[in-house]
Amino acid sequence: MGSALAVQWARRHADVALLATEHDGAALAAWRGHEPHPALGIPMPREVACHPPPEWAAVLAGADRVAVCVSTPGLRAAVAVAGPLTPPDAEWIIATKGWEPATLQSPSEVVAGVVGGAGRIVALGGPALAAEIVIGAPTAVVAAAADVALAERVAASLRSTMLGVAVTDDVAGTEIAAAYKNVVAIAVGLCEGLTDRFGQSAVIHRFANARAAVFAQGLVDMAHLAEARGGRTATVLGLAGAGDLFVTSLGGRNGRFGRLLGAGQSPERALRAIGSTVEGVANTAAALALADCLSLDLPTARAVDMALREQLLGDEGLADLRELFRAAVAGDGGAEGRVTLER
Image 1 (tube, rainbow, N blue to C red):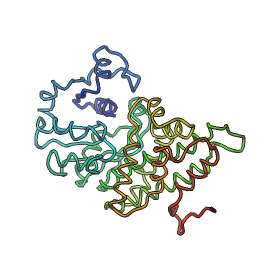
Image 2 (tube, one colour):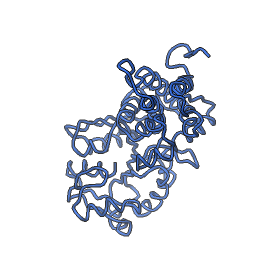
Image 3 (spheres, one colour):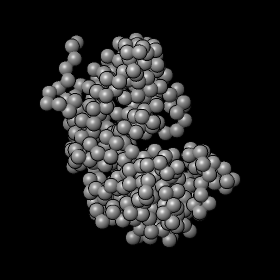
Image 4 (tube, rainbow, N blue to C red):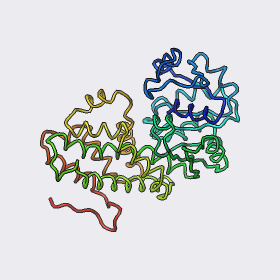
């Protein structure tokens, strides 16, 4: 995502540099060799210079904005290095999604704690696959900040004919949606993957009914969690929540990981097959820990946790689907009453 945002800002004629961490050796080598980006499949524009860690200080010294796109476990360490090198009035744009495992803090809370205060921080959310941003496919995202004027400035820097940016002050709702949608996407993928285990007929279209019910319950869980943290249900029902969940279930890593689990692969084997970070695994544990602190029940997270611990999916075919479905829709489904299944 860092590379994709760099491409978009370059299109908008911004002076942009891409900072590679110690984990980005392949991307750095591709840039130096004029080769396609290993994840995006196209060469990076030459106006986007890529810099290894020893060159960070020189680049950050003149930065007006810093976009942070590392994975959640590495967020604090990356910002701890970059923060002291960056002007004190620089704006921070956070595309990291999830919760810090040790503290259960959101990305914006982590960054605020490191650089001092939340007044210069914007959280990005919404349905934005990096590869589609790079090729200029129509995309809409959300910029969230306590200071709406700051969010609007960042939005204006990114907007183009094919990239729309909505603005909100609901940082909590945007960040919770960004994290919890990974959990729900795994649950939706699990339903789809079970059809791969024993085939499908002309009648069964990858358990579309079950996937829709799990999707809906996931949105309800997301709304409950957002409200408990001061967010708004309207945010969950928009781009940041329903939109991001849809694209992640349809074509994201978390949805594909869930499908592999449902098809019978172990979590370890499924992770190897994906070959990159599946945020929903850590997000599931963090969501359940956060739910305990808030006295909430999150059925979709509980169902995914059972699958990850291999207590739900074995070799039972349709029996597995029944148990998954029973666990994942054990909440209110967004209706007046609770969904009840015969035992």
